[in-house]
Image (tube, rainbow, N blue to C red):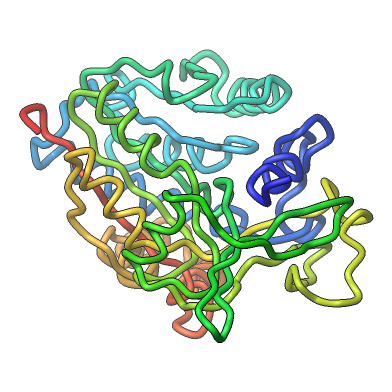
Length: 338
């Protein structure tokens, strides 16, 4: 089978990794920015407020998260909006795009426990269901989970892609014109090519008249020309091509991911007439969004000891040698006339 099919089955098939509820953080397979500090969501909330106050989005816009897992990020954003601009909760609407019913139920329960009836949460099964005049859309680590094909070019210039038979990886000559075109466009000799970025961007552009889209993921603006695809299992990282790996034992029981080629993502949005207004490291983006100012407010309101504990968590988000530089943030905007 094609590797993209194997990838999809691994994560989203009948017994796929994301079809079950997975703990994120110390008890799971990996950490995310959301599990590190509530101030990650707080900084994005501050950015949302800035976007509304600038006049780009109205005060009755929708705040939409794509791929929310437990719902922590959107809930953190709501808590900070309540703290910073509580009147906005009277006009904003909140939604999550989530394909799995059991995760929708987890999210509904978490929001009910957190906010009672004060916040109404709308669910969409897919972005194709969204029909809105305006929205601020947030996506944390979703593009590294899009299906992908793996490409390898031999020393004599023969381009091959990975196929899978009974959990064994082999290379066959690549005859797919779409993959070959992307390899030529981005100079990819070896690595991952994501599938679906173009359709995702076109669907958003078609369904929402005006929006700001903010996404966080690990990767670079240009392909690294090496395989980044890897498996996360109980906080250990295994390269997919590690010889002693038994893929049949890890299949569906561990996370499978790869670095995002942000140039491919940006081009896909640009082709859908969605403008890329910024691309930077997570460190720069969160500081620009106002995370330092939020910590100062915490210090003033809660005292030194609480402040210092939270600073240690936020440092993990900002460290130049860690998440701060490893993760990138792209912000896109679509105008009604675009």
